[in-house]
Length: 215
Image 1 (cartoon, one colour):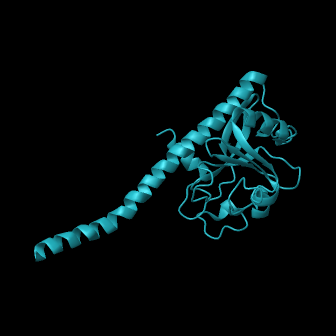
Image 2 (tube, rainbow, N blue to C red):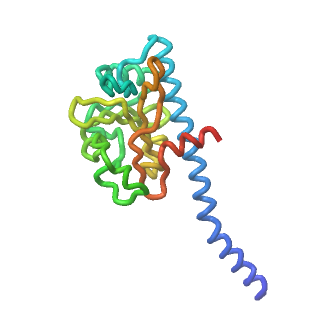
Image 3 (spheres, rainbow, N blue to C red):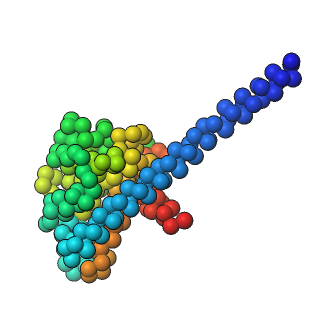
């Protein structure tokens, strides 16, 4: 009887030590899968717009240093076309938190724990007040949430964030929230890349998640 109790005790200790690791691994795998799905859906929607219209609405950065570094004059048109491709079930043009499009996200100004000091430089369009009260948000039928980046009212940018599993937790930057931008790397060649790499404790930058797609 004593040996049985000892064995059961050992099994209990091993389970207590291994279960958190197994759960964390499962959650990471699930989030990686959701990231891949959300990124692929957005990427494909952008390519469909480009194929249908011949060009994307001007809502992107570009690398021609002899000119303006931004082309944001058609961002509203871009988001309207994007959402038509994405089966949007709810839109909030401001007041996204109050109107129940998004949970209460942290902003660049409220994140207390992070992995990289440089990640908190700039990116003022992702201040918490902007996210909750001013930026637009779109809820897709699969639960994914997209919210825009706006530094000042009406000042659009070719940068947006995706919450790859919607209102489900953890609702943290670098875990299930990642930011992207459209960047014209060459004339007529526009890529979907990482931007504003905000990371809460234990999370990953979007660049790391993107590199994981190719493994």
